[in-house]
Image 1 (cartoon, rainbow, N blue to C red):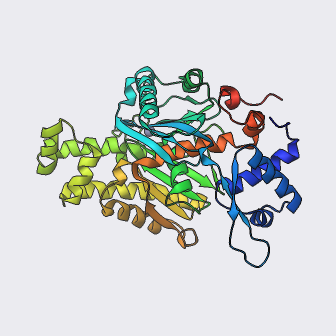
Image 2 (image 1 turned 90 degrees about the horizontal axis):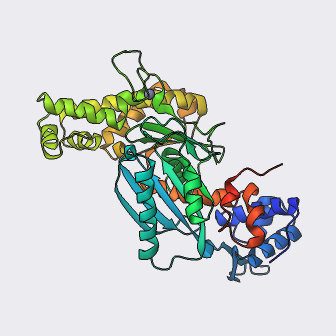
Image 3 (image 1 turned 45 degrees about the vertical axis):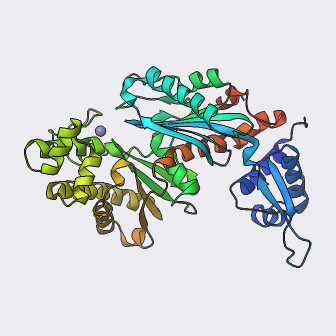
Length: 423
Ligand SMILES: [Zn+2]
């Protein structure tokens, strides 16, 4: 066991480790160039990280004139992370390494409206299943990450008045998992985790200002601002589904307000619209879907649109235009370089993305859209669990946490890491 580091040494250690684990610097000389730290300080901090088993030093690379550089890599197999991404109608669980690589994964239908006890019992059972069926799970459990489809107060890890999650308001998710696993636990909403996943390993990699929209059962946005996930003061940033887009009193949202975007263009609203088309004979294709499963989902509507069903096409284009109009305001306000469209409804024909794109370009200022890209999410259903793993590891290696477990060599057995430091 090594002795504790003074504060300024810890600052440099976190900086150097971030450079190495995020793949930005691969040698001591790159670290010196990129961090502005002196050569001796870099050498000391790298030495610490190697001693503590967080960084591995490779064989000398090819010489480029001077002394050949030894490649530095993050030891991602020092431990493992358990993650779960709960959607309105599904659950994804995974066990990953410390760089978000998925070692084992499972997904199945679930109903978040069944409440926290039923849902989280199942998550725990699935974690056990993963740990027994996944080969070569490395090291100890370093942390647990959970995503839920509603607003989360990030500091406490509790859902706050989530509109589609009856029984979850204020539920102590963190305390439950921390008590069971004896490891630190972080909770965030599913859209932030989608954004983190796409940013770390997907289509948003390399962009510093990104808006990731999830069109699932509802609609939400994750915001990467200046190279950081922007959660806002309480953790509710990006809740764009409840922006008011009309004052038609007949359009009541699940949140209780009138005229929310989600009540027009969210997956639940689109499914309901599709069901109307099926029942009143306007769409024979959706009538078949209704016959077969007893309900029409947004995915059914998207599939019907891809076969050219005229009502489904019109509905999807109209939803795309409404989302695009909202995004145009976001673009004017925030000036992202990339908008990513994800979620179940986004796996729909290109006409949906085209309608969004058309509305954004038509209604945003030219300077804001000059270099703006709009793209589908690239990680599909895995973005949430990859993002949850990134959340846990980023928190573990944050300046606030790392000093509290570094001496022990690992954070397992430290569920209190998530508590704010006293003083
Ligand atoms: Zn609403």
